[in-house]
Length: 468
Image 1: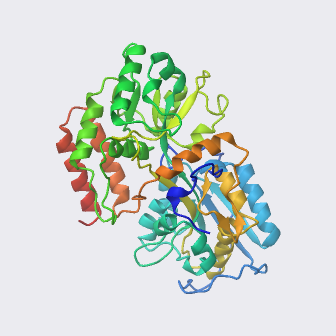
Image 2: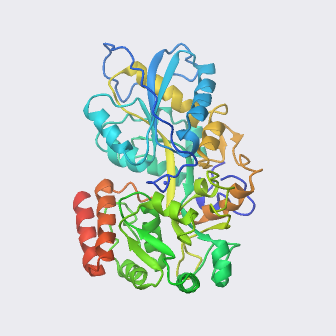
Image 3: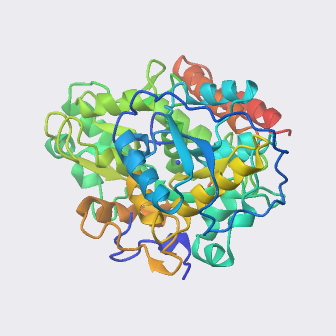
């Protein structure tokens, strides 16, 4: 039975939900080198109609070669993991051949856009609503997946998630699979040595704005005046962190509730940006993006990270999960808010979309693949756990998904943050242009531009892109 997302992990819930910080997503593994794509033979088939019924779930006779392009969403960027899931799919659909190409968040969008322009878009793509719905879907490039959304699935998928995957006209351009809450992190070891842990509530993972700035000052004094945290703005990578930091400090918003216009020039946000600029220990750094910030944090050069999520907390590339490279303990935290209890975290939602490449047979095969991964007892649990994120529903076809991570202490603890998920505003029109304008604005502030002027220019640029 579906529950409101705010109560997803209340109490002792054991499941774990943007990415990551290289863009809207983090990964626990570097994406492998891309595999050669196998092109299906050209077929003279009519363009698919949006109303064409999806192939039935037992249509094992469907035969097609389809391509899946996936951003590095947890272990969906790992070839061994993805191949094992495809093998499971092929047990039910042996005549559908899936060739995979792995994208990253540095060049992935350019690769997809180039493929679109050349008439070679992938059949299936895995990413979030900000790309599948608000970008490529809004351009009329995606297939409406409403016909494979059953009534049972509608009842099982969280309302807030489903609404982000369906546009204003009711077309579903993304079938959601997994989600997370983006957060920040502190070097707990350094905070303890600096006497700054008194400002942190490690039970609720929250803190007040005043306590945040007091802690930054303490750590800054302890480390001899070196930078404690960086407002990274070398590009859009990880910008969910800087947006959440600024919006939460004094209760500002990034867009209106209807997702029609940008509101980041509020008095609250101007105050927050100015406070960060004035704080000793906080540096506006135009030389790095979120992924760079994570590396500096792991190396001990920064004591807080604003680009964090469960995939980063689980990362074991250079040490055990939850430790920096040198063995300091990492504590994940919600972003600070005025009273400490009203923090609103940016969420990440990931799922599958289908490009309309004009081949009805490939579209039918793509829908079968999505149905298997996102809405089946056999496939969905594996698809979710491979992402290292949380399911977008408590059950799939009635089967319980709430115990996927019951033996994982880190995932269970991270579940505390899920109650703080805020509005998924990343589907606001003009999103791609707004992201660029955001980091440009932060760069301007970092070089001394008046905050009110810089933020005003950002909002004007973003709202012009949104058609306002």
